[in-house]
Image 1 (tube, each protein chain N blue to C red):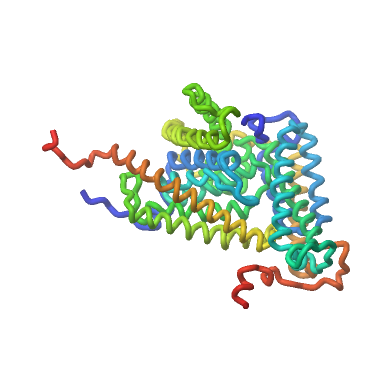
Image 2: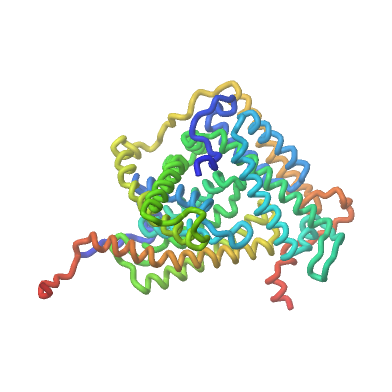
Amino acid sequence: MEIKKKNVGAMLVGEWNTKTIVAVAIGAALFGVLMCYGGIPIFTNTSLTTAMIIPVIVGALFGPLPAMVCCGVGNVIADLIGGWGLWFDWSVGNAVMAFCVGLLPVYGANIKEGIFTAKHAVIYAVCCILGNMVAFGVITPIFSALFYGSDLNLTFLQALAATLGNTLVLVVVGIPILLVLANRYKSRTNLKEDKGDQY
Amino acid sequence: MNNKLVINFVPGPTPVHKLAGSTKMLIFLLFTAAIIATFDIRVIAALMIVPIIAIISMRPNYKPLIVLLSVMLVTTGVIGSIMLLIVSPDTGFSHVGGSTIIWQASEKLFITRETLWYLLVTMTKRVASFLTVMMFALATTPSEFASGLAFLHMPYKVCTIVSLAYRTIPDIASKFIDIRNSMQMRGVELSKKASVGKRLKATGQLLIPLIMSSFGRVESIANAMDLRGYGRLKTRTWYAEHELTNLDKILRIAAIFFGAAILFYIVYFRIINPYPAEMWCPFIAKEDIIAKSQFEDIFFLKWFNK
């Protein structure tokens, strides 16, 4: 069976049907709640947060743009219920980071069909590190200094802490979750090799 | 968890609660923009008046507000200030435009008057931002939030995402409590009797069923929405958007003037005729300010210059 290849643009945008919308909304709510109550603080304004699992799942199942919207909205919600004021700089940073994390389907790690190999895991880890560096090393400090007059040295240190913490969570927790998800979806497809002689 | 939340799900009785969602959104965004635009402590202090009046007029439950405010003051205020003093004690120089040492322990650890002023200004900015967010969060229900976003011409799918996410938070909280109770029924110790490490590990184990069951509901919610014809048409009307009250009309006219004032402030005081330093400070006369770029201070750029 030949699967028709989608072009990269369509993959980046993802399929925006009702299911995606609901999944992104629930992901955003979970992201917000976990951001507020599911973190271990490691530095000012940053923590080793379990919320980072959410963009991995949403990105794997629905693509990068849904993951991006999910984290952007999720961070705004975290700001609203956490009550530390609205920090657009971190929302934008998280959204960009989630976009990079959610690139999974673009390089062929199709979790919905159970495809996730060692090669994909390596690309995923590289994407996580690069995405975090771009998001928290470049975008967030710029907005932070421009909007809120934060001290650049402290912001860069925070960015470093956020990058390390997020990458740790994304790689150490994310890859096993992706494997589990891929296995779950694989067992639901009927494309099994016939092993009649084992009976 | 529920009593910790400040966000509002039920339409309230006071005039501020009864405003249309679009007006609330407009005022919230304008105040956020104004707080972002200015570094002048006099302007920020003036901007704090309206949120304080609005919050008092809503007669909220003050307990969670005070908890949140004190958590913010301790984490970002006290710890953040100490970190800043350790990392770059001379940051006031590039922001305020001067350096007057008032206490010195060693070459790399000292306190300048300007850095303290900088800390005061950023802290005021944080508190103002906090008050604005609280004003919005206390007044707005999820549907009003969505209708306010639709008023700003956001695509309605994004509006749905926001309102659905906002509305799901109590569900997630109750589901979390359910899962925790059932784990405790099976003998997982989550009370204070167990050690901190054990409790952390057990809480980590709670997350997987929480995430799985939350995402498991996606299908049924999506089907319910599809059955009610969601997403068939290009536009959407909002149940929460009602006719404008008198206060709405007054506030919208005020918002136009306020927006114009912000624009004028940015164009005139930040671009055409900027103050020589980023922040106004009473200790330093305008003529004495030494301009210094923030970028000269970044630690890793110094390594390259060596």
